[in-house]
Image (cartoon, rainbow, N blue to C red; front, side, top):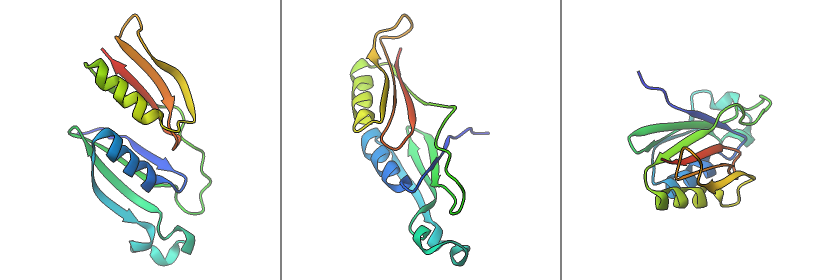
Length: 135
């Protein structure tokens, strides 16, 4: 069994996953749009280009996502964080800087803690909460 995070966006899923692919070094494996699905005739025309499902391989793990289902209210991302862990401080700094680009909130700058060489928290420009940890 695998446990994979699945993120839901408010119309900017494609931009988010292209950003993550470039900044985190992932590889997008599949993009499916609402307008290309068997339910295309049931979705509003403005949602046709939105993402119904995407999966990205990142260091042997899969990150998945989609845009919010057309017609459903979007409640944002809350109650979790995606945690990236590394043993290299330069890599932790690179990851934090990359995800901080146009971030909505820097919750905690990347800094030394009693458990780590560096730990930081942020909410990126797409609303995804992240924790970067360097053991």
